[in-house]
Length: 583
Image 1 (cartoon, rainbow, N blue to C red):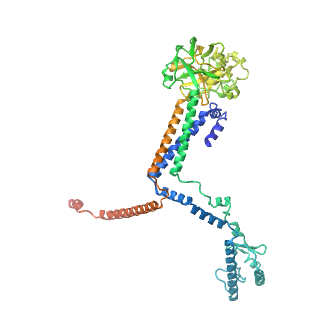
Image 2: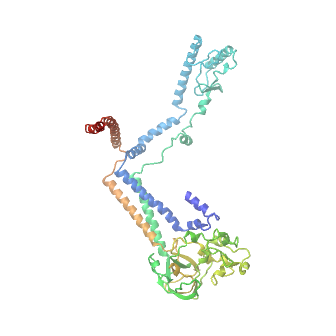
């Protein structure tokens, strides 16, 4: 819950993290995110259950035996029925228990009245005298549960009240003795000709006949059950089937996705080491920042059918956008069009040059991938370069400052289309979608990013020709460039490894369940064995006694050694007497 709360809040907090804005929502829209989200806890659950099973089956403790014995006793039908009968008796407020209680109250009341009458005749009271000085001692009436009085009891109470009022003329407070006994914490009142103990009612615990009462009195049935072998095998079987099912779906989705890659600069082993299949056609650009562009035609002969939409992507190797100094070197308020002025606090590099302020500033904006691709064959297929970025980037994160593009023509500012002529149109500026895609930093050093979209089906054997205008220099960081055609599926791109890994994990889990079943059939362990519990308790008691005797023996030996060490040994006497002889 905390993880999702963090994603929901942090993903829409624009001022807190400009780079992370809307990333959680885009991530949750991917099916592979949910596959991983449930796959990782399921893997942890497998290891946890296996460790518990091995511990209980081969190295059980006294606590394990006690929990199992308690569980087996509660599981017994006889014990359940007995417990239900006891609970029903406790919930029955108007049955035999109440009648017996009333009879006991009548007997106690009769005995109290008889004792008070005898004490009054003798003029003495037993125990403490709760009356005020000068007042006649009055008997202490004990308040029982609420019940109606008989006619004789009413007359007896009225007669006693009259006698008490007559004898307490010297003290005005003597009449409250029977009504309020604060010292004994008894509060007795007359309501409807009945005794009512208000103090007792206020402190009375909640009725256990209701769910709330049982909750307040901690009488609810427990929800935790011991992890028995049967429960372990059932849960692990479900986990194993889950892994195999999801892994099979991932493999099917991965097979539906296809790609065609042509690397036109760099070392092809960077992609081959990751398992990619590719062709190589040279369009290498020399290592010069301001070198003249190079134009190449790259041909792709499709090996698979690709249904629309087909995405055209560019790939880079050995380029790390996730470096902190690189990823943070931008000014978000300049990128979204709030201001055209730069900030040296956020942009450490490329703030200004020769008196001209860069709009936008920063290292990330000044290292944009500026190679361009043009589809020249077949002519019946068109390529669209819009709707390749996130909608929040187009609507919120990027915009041109007010006064654009008039202020760009001055000598004070240099805008984005002036930095990348022929790549960024003047009318778009910072709202160019290729620029938006580039500013979404990649997590790894080898990545692919969208360049365009083809909304028509491509058939196997078709020859697709792209005209590449190479401008981006890769030799300083020893990187490589590639152009890729991709057809995505419900899991995204091709990802056979994850599907195979999940199917393998499911097979391992089911194999573990099979081993557990064989063990339970060949050598089952009795659950809740009270005899073993008694033996373990005796062994624990013996170990405790032995430890106590060892402690007593060690303390005795230490005291004995301390006493003996005070007396010099026989071999020490010549050395002790030698200084005296020399003296």
